Image (cartoon, rainbow, N blue to C red; front, top):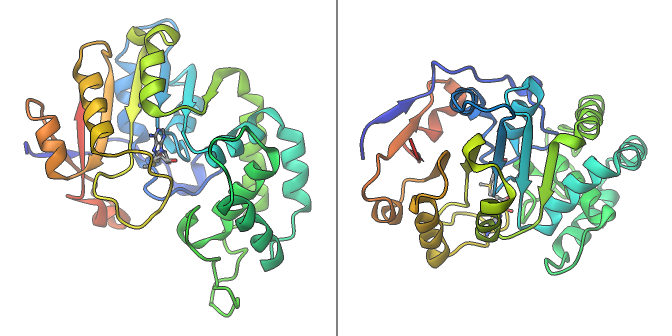
Length: 290
Ligand SMILES: C[S@@+](CC[C@H](N)C(=O)[O-])C[C@H]1O[C@@H](n2cnc3c(N)ncnc32)[C@H](O)[C@@H]1O
């Protein structure tokens, strides 16, 4: 372990200024300033930025919106997450209509959770699954997609109700902007290792920063799909350290396996001196190619 990376010098967008329409557990929007400064160091005509485990893509969308990234590549293996992004990006008006007309109540929550829980990852894109995933994301405790109940509880007796995080106007304007930016977004639904392997021919790697934010090695609660295991964490380490990818940044939980897989590398804990983020301190580590 070699010290901590102090992120307080980098700009951190306020929650209201985030470009992503999602709420995402462990979202990395707070790293936008840091990632942006690294991306800016890449001397390129057109700057590319990729997230092989994109989830809510907090940082990616901020970088696209601010113009620091010209093109972003979003990939997630979860068909639910992928369907939500694809529906917003490529069926934007239909998505906005559904958002405008949606009743935010337990009936809609039950219908949506049914679709989300029974989603088959081997199946193709579905608009309805995409909308249901987003509905569950905005109406469940901590924005979780899997396993969490609605805000306010099943009986809706809590202090906060199911629509406590349903900011229709803000959500709509973020999705509208996303639709308008679709030509600068490349979306895929692949396993991250496949995505990385294909990037060798698909991405201009010298002009691209890859931000890798895999599920924790130490699986806690089931916050989202975890299609990783020790062998895949190890294969990812081989790939990243194999010399093909010049610009990458990786975040992980501070787990012995990571120290083993990246033994020759500088491993910094992420230290964020913002009151709301103190719990993250010492819990996550950051590694980089440069
Ligand atoms: C830690 S979250 C990423 C959060 C994201 N950085 C953000 O700011 O919102 C991990 C994501 O990886 C996805 N995932 C899990 N296993 C995967 C795999 N093998 N390949 C690609 N994506 C995977 C999950 O669906 C989840 O959305």
